Amino acid sequence: MRMTTPGIGQHQIAQRLFLFIASLWVGSLITVGYLVAPTLFATLTDRQVAGMVAGAIFKAEAYISLVLCVGLLVLANLLVSRGLQTYRAIRWILLAMLICAAAGSFVLMPWMESLREEALLQGMPVRYSPLAGLFSTLHGVSSAIFLIQSLLGIYLVWRLSQPMTPSN
Image (tube, rainbow, N blue to C red; front, side, top):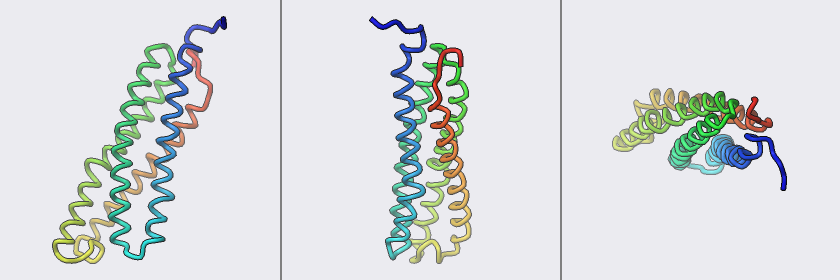
């Protein structure tokens, strides 16, 4: 029978699960944002179609982010209550990532979608409509928020890859 220090061995599975989920999530953020979306625009000749497909992928990614972030926040709270104080700082990173995902999901994406639909009702793609300037601004803000979320995610995984004990 193996003896472990209380708090270290008993939370090792939860910590590994946390790191595994966070790593997959951050990997999906990076893959979607910096591989899939640029590839769509480089491959498809119709930029409007590429934008609509990319928008649908980013929307799915945003909802996945919301669910995983809330789940990881719950797990982080559990680990903090069990004595792993390092997860206190992790919760702040997750909260910032949650705010980024919520801003994209509930503010920017619906607004951009409505601009796109309004332009299509006028018989033109949004980039040729009078709404192009606003759409471009929202796209820039959305891209900046996604970059911040991605960088926070990389920092999250970096922090999680450190050995954590109840004394941390």
